[in-house]
Image (cartoon, rainbow, N blue to C red; front, side, top):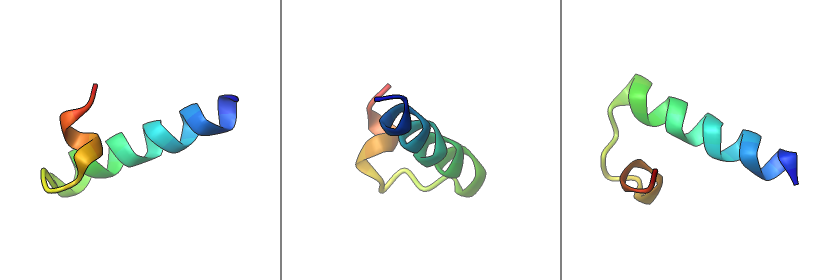
Amino acid sequence: MSHGVELTLAILRECQEFEDTSLPACYEE
């Protein structure tokens, strides 16, 4: 299950790096 968490964190990190607010994950916390 931790793999899914790592994937989410990776997506959130990308959102911060690229500031891509178009990604749904950027809205979810």
